[in-house]
Image 1 (tube, rainbow, N blue to C red):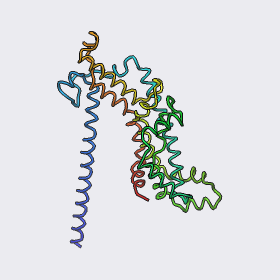
Image 2: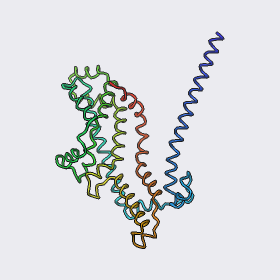
Image 3: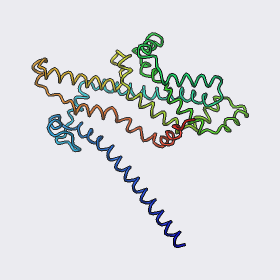
Image 4: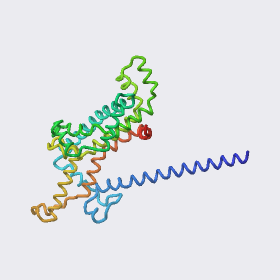
Length: 306
């Protein structure tokens, strides 16, 4: 009995040590991830001269809002419009994409006719693409979405990888007995999908929703390729244009190709770059914790191959 008691005590001590080690590792990892973000925040409120002379620091040497004044400047309305466009595109695109992805995943999780052939085409499309020229011709000549708000939504609606994740999640998480019992009671496929599949697939849907919303929010490629109107560009592309304009002014002043007034202006670049990062990532940082409840379960179950 004494030997058993001592062995249990040793096991408990080892378990406590392992838990402490894991918690310590997580704390160190969180600190390592948080410190660069604090550097970005500090740099956005620092003077450009301080960044050049002293480098990045956790606390600004001289606190200033000059970077945010330049970011907003005289184009505050354009910045608000870009924010509203990005929010609309992200919300609308995420909802539409989830509907398409979940219906396709549910169909592929059932005994669908030509299921193998459809799965092959989905896998083939994930591995190979028609190229940028074919993609551009489809968007402009067939769909005719150039210079419309749909140019920021439609091309990113379907992701073959997300279909596979949701299909696997539905197959592993939704008992087929429930579906069969509902079918025997006369329930249609739409009733099964709306009243059973969607509620039981919340973790998987939340995981995919996070991926899709991040893709829409961070997208700058679609407006660069398909949008020429300044009133419907999104936030990321608008920020990129601001940074390109600032960089052009700096290069012109350095080469002494600008007018005399411009040559004497010292435009901050690094602080504005950090301010742009904060302005772009802020809303998604606030939204991410709401997905945390379902994210771990969704990514764990959905990553298992079925």
